[in-house]
Length: 213
Image (cartoon, rainbow, N blue to C red; front, side):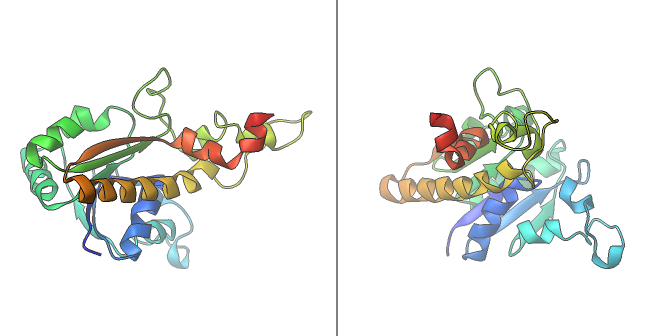
């Protein structure tokens, strides 16, 4: 309770994390845009079998208890609303591809000019740095590099992915925890910070025996 989160996350991995915090009392404002509608808004199953951006099951499951605003971050008006929301919030979260927030003009350094003690948490496949940082994708794509496809299926057949996109349902709980860690750090020091979470590294925690082998 009392925690204010500005949520730029989309699809599953990010929104699940902020949804958990919203359900426990955080005030979460979810930012969307009609120029690139959230993919899980258009995914099955739909209520009564009728497609529609507000009729899918998966979107409300990962966005319950949140407020919502639609903004075009490429317009001056949309960016001004974001700046006001940054001034209001304690935490900014995002799970776009590495470098996206910087290109939009809302990197951690940009946000600090708006609110000096803001906490920012980025969560993407390989983190913001390193040779694989430019690769973007969803849990289906990350489950291979994370090693899960190596552990499933049979050696004489094609790859069999674990169902569902498993890293999308592991990494959110680490995202939630690092948000809480950032809040704890702020309460103890009065300072903000930037947390770069690699979904791959978080997901590896579920297969430690295989990694040791």
